[in-house]
Image 1 (cartoon, rainbow, N blue to C red):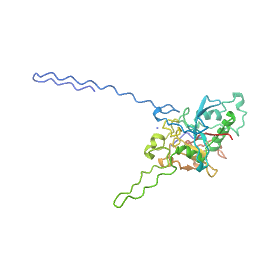
Image 2 (cartoon, one colour):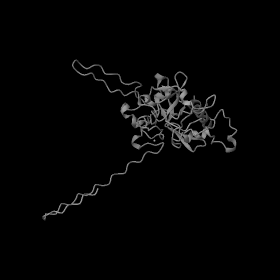
Image 3 (tube, rainbow, N blue to C red):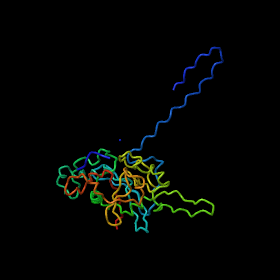
Image 4 (cartoon, one colour):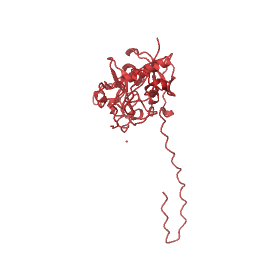
Length: 318
């Protein structure tokens, strides 16, 4: 069961002079009114100045795919491969999967209403007891509170509907996309200076997918220090150099781990900065489903995981 509770001048008048005096000089013209603040970017968008050039991958072009029954398009960009990691080029969705797309799968909106009840519950999520968005927001917000099985089932469904091959990223694919060409580890300290000089140690940046390290994290991610305990609409921070949003923070993302086990990556709006580094990972914790009264626990929903979501990748068909 999904609980509701959770970690929200006018100048002063001139005094008359006791004796005649020359007229006071005219007051300077009033300053022009301040420009209105720039509006917040709409969900799924970012200011033009923050847009990043896309990676050039031979044979792979950006594309969009319409989600059946949703009236929503998912945008994908090419991600270069990494031979050292055994990663072939692939496409990644530019955003975490939003409710706008997931609802069509979860509630069978691509099917005529009279057919929905007959669809096998083994291939689609069971009906949640309470709204799984937990009241944070729905349209334009990342899907949350879903299990790894639920995320994989969405990919299978979308593949079957479109004829393309969609799935969750592997852990290595996710890291390659997140680092966006940057080193996988922080820079090593420089060697000591000559005798009498200070050692030149570069400021640690952590393995983040952008310049500037943790000091710039707030420009790219929603996390514990700036999210006010709530997820935010997708793509309202800067994208990385491959044009992908929210790989650090907002909601943690299911991937297929190197050891074959499901793990989440990227940290979330409840995590401190150190858990947003590219190398951070977490297995599913019992606490993410502790209040679910079902025995066994739901295979589809995480009653206490409103910080867990996912992102879709597409691979080339061989």
